[in-house]
Length: 131
Image (tube, rainbow, N blue to C red):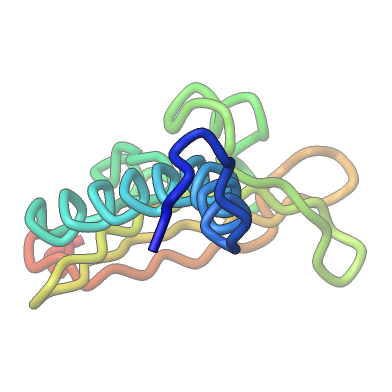
């Protein structure tokens, strides 16, 4: 049996090699994603929103507090919107943990003159229950 060493191999290995090369960037992305997922799990929490000064909530007075005063107390709103034709500003902070989730949010509704017509504050932080 004689083998010619200079003859190129004709097999599917060349195709498979190119396929592996094409898959390499995808594998790198998957590894990176997996790494960040592990970091998040080990860190134990993910947060969203923007924390705000909850101790100012009792100072809101319906039909007296203005939009400018709300912004002075809490800063710019995290979200804005419209509810029943009234402009709304929302402040919220949500902290999702492995064994515990904490959240607090404030929604303020304004009339056409820019005064507070109503507001809602919700929280499951123990220290906020005294407000």
